[in-house]
Length: 163
Length: 212
Image (cartoon, rainbow over all chains, first blue to last red; front, side, top):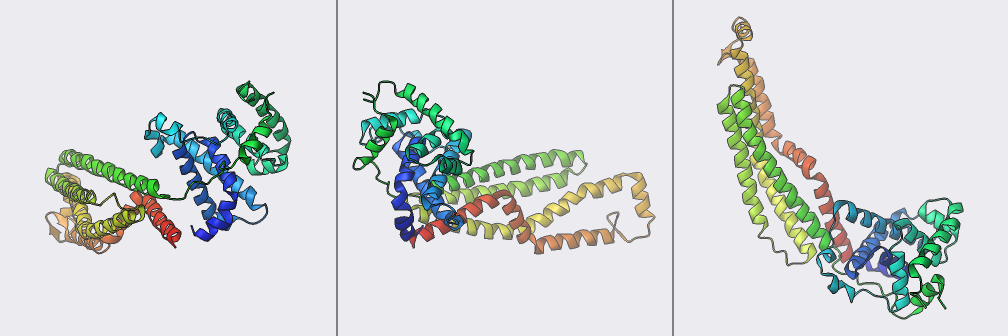
């Protein structure tokens, strides 16, 4: 991956990648693995980008696909990342956003199903339902109902934790 | 009052340092270790399979009435295993403490050297296995009264009770196997390890591109 491509096409969108990767990982090491894998896949698939959508939508799509694939691989094949072998206490203190409420919200998001995580993050990123549906390859009519259901679930999970 | 999730999200990411991208370093470290470990595992499994197969040959060929041919194939297969084991030991000498790229390159050169040596070996191995595998057929043709008599009455020139032209055909096939032994081995190798080789090449190409 050339550094020019990284600086011009990945770094400005790294926020998207970070937000998504955080929702699918529970340790700093896994997060870095996922982040790197997403960057690599964006670079590898850059030729397939046909400018039918925005570059950011493309980045969202690849980030979600990579995270879901890696998560599935990890579950099915017992694929181990280096962090799997680290003691939990080694991970705890390195993994946190500066904002405590955001950490609590992320903990709740991580308890959702994999697809619900994607839906709610795209919603929080203020993506229109039609774009969420496009990224996830689903029907836009269902997104609104789903978002409502996920928000209710998050409300239960966050009950009184964020003030 | 409880904040809405939308507000938590916005406020959280407004904070400084909330979105610092991790450095893309050591990108291929795990990948290279993973791929080489996979190759080593496959090589081990392959060796065990050859060993099991070698012992099976002893039994099968004895049952077919050609224990010497069985023992010969057994010896050839054990020899292949022994050579592979010796090669695998040299693999351990590759320094894993170098960078991923150097590690992959060292592994790749080891692999090329091993393949080139194996090609020389397999040129002899395939024809010998083929000729040994013919022995139960020769034995069956001779042991069966009807076929034996038919051969004897055929008027063909015979060597060891088998028409000479059949020996010549077998010999020609064996010579062809010697000539194309390298290609047969490459095909055999790609069938077993093809995907790993492809991944290895891709990984090296990726790192080279990254280093540009």
